[in-house]
Amino acid sequence: MTMATRRLIDSIRGEYLRYKKLAEDSMEQIEDATLVASRGADANSIAAICWHVSGNLRSRFTNFLTEDGEKPWRKREEEFDTRQVSRPELLAKWEAGWQPLFAALAGLTDDDLDRTVTIRGQALAVHEALHRSLAHTSYHVGQIVLLAKEARGSAWKSLSIPRGQSDAYNRAIAPQRAPETGR
Image 1: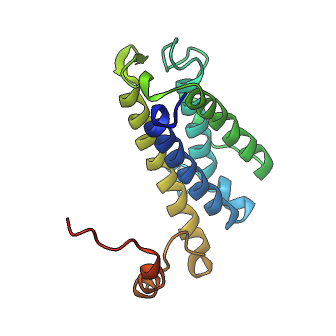
Image 2: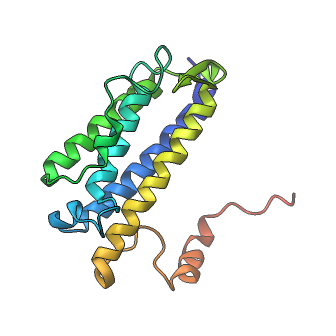
């Protein structure tokens, strides 16, 4: 297999890894009790969101190319239940969802992108299913980041360029940027 046959797959894998790390870095900043706290009866806790992301990824990517992405063993409604779990339990559940995703991606090449998979009986090209899943996952990671940031308040450590430091950041990386090509 040449590098070119995995360019898009590797790019998608890199984005999943980036969002996974954003969620994990957010969860590292908060107390264990905050992981299971919710803002109300209809609000999701970080634990519920992690349970849902894990269940979704596990279902979608277990036997990705050969079975419908909505498995009969998935209990989607239960993913949103209020639960009291420890940080190690939550992180184990989180990882259990990511493992099938990364295993499925490891077995794909860019030549597979136009193959067809099904999700809830809907036929999708592999590239469509991957982009849909990546968007869904990043949506929920954004919720995790927001909840963690709100809980942490002024003690939050920025996961990107801190507010008010964009100019300094741009000046610092300017020497590393490639010169303009005149396009």
